[in-house]
Each structure stands twice: as structure tokens, then as C-alpha cells.
Image (tube, rainbow, N blue to C red):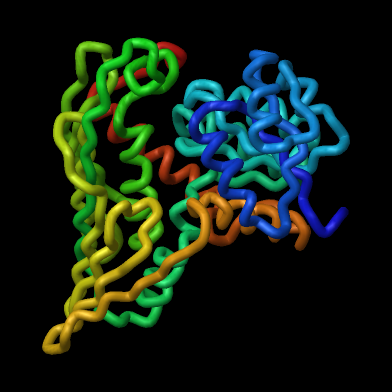
Length: 328
């Protein structure tokens, strides 16, 4: 295989544009194709990002032998179908978060990828951002001692749009799958899978969840206290409390550029961790590196953990009485 991974983007929405801008900073990636169900949209995207091939058919893209890796960036409700199509055509896949609508879909994708020995990864880009890499290093060194509490959340108030995926149950809308997944994934990264899940929240008039508070209890009684809402405004951040100090992850928690380290009895230290571009390049670089090394998953975002996160999300939705139409 070539030293550069030949990448295609499936979908031409906002996330696809952000990812395409990011991979301009990925030295091991060559963006070679894009697909949309709309010929005009795929052509416009190809011209904007100087992509040599564009398709108006997902199967045509998935079956093209000149593509190594596909980034799936379609609506939530399509992630399973579109990722499965690419895997069946022998393509490695990065699937945008949330990985799927629910855990059963996630399990089927993982089983397919493993059976075909193909690379598959959830596009949880925050894990590869330099500040989060440093955070994991600090926690591994127990710089703030034994960490027992994570407090995290964020809120934003988009204008209501009945056509937006965010407010459409048929597209897997709602604030949990759109933004809450970051919080659940961070808690999983830090504490592992929870053994107890408590959630309360409200559904809006469109039938999707608009805000919730979540408590996750993990091993050794570590707690994650999380909130996410479409009914207020708060910059998304994280505070981790240990018995020797605390770490504050500056907003936005999904792509922070600074951490504040507070050790008891010492002055606070602000760790500035800037990076070029918008940050989406780091997950692309990780995926390409894994493929070039012959690996079928990332150790930073392993598939078993992705499945566990989806199981936690399913339990939260169950407690909120949120079921999507495609699950009936």
C-alpha cells in the first residue's frame, strides 16, 4: 500500500467540510473522492477542496478500487447503513460520532469489520487533540492523585428548524447523540465503562431530547456528573478532581487548546497546547497510521469501548423514554 492513504468522504454536510479542511494538515492522507446523493453537491464539494473524483452514488464510491479509507459523515440514522456498505466493499472506515443509533447496530458493524479484517474507528476526534493527549499523560502519572470526580457539560441554543437533523427523530436527532456523546466518551476514557447509569431530562415538542443530567458510577466509586442542554448557553468544559489537585480542561472540551493544572499548595499552571488547523486532522492521521501498520483498530479509540459507550447511551435514552422510529 502507498505511503499515503487514499481517503474518500461520504456525505457533504458541515462535518464533511470540517473534516476536509482538517485533513489538509494530515501528511499521510490524500483526499481523492467525495460522494453525495446530489450530483450538484458532490461537484461543488469537489471543486472547493480540489478533489479529483466525485460521485452521486454511495455504492460507486464504496466500490472504487482507488480508495483505501472512507470517512462516513452522513446523518446519524445513516451511519450504520453507509459504514456497512463500505465495509462490504472492502473499505476501511472512520464513522462520525455517534458511531451508530444504538449498540446493536454498533455490534454488527464491529463484527463485520473483524470478520473481514478491515480497519474501523469511531471518529471521536477529541481523543487525538494534543490537550487531551496531554491530559491522559497527566492522569497516567497520577499528577493530581486519585481521580474520583469528573464534572462536565455544555449548553447551546440553536434556532429551531424542523428540517435540521438535530430536531428530527427519524435522523437520530437530540442533544445526547449530537453533543452528549462527547461527555460519555470522556468519562469512559478516564474511568472506563460505568456500572451504574442515572439520567433525567426532557423531550421537546419535536420528540427528541433537549436537555439532560447524567450521573455515571464507575469502578472504585468514581463519579462522572454530566449535563448537556439545548435550553441554555454554557461553554463546554471539564473539571477533574483528584486527592492532590484538579485539572480544568478549557472549552471547548471536544477541541481544547489549554489545560489548567492545580496542585494543592502550588500556584496554578496553565498548559497551552495549540495546534494548526481545526483539529480534525489528528483522527485522520491516527487512522492512516493504523492502516499503514496493518492494524484494524485504534488503541486510542478501541471498538470494544465504542460499543460500551453506545450501550451507555442506550441506557440513558431508555431512562429518558427516547426511542427512535427506526428502532420500532
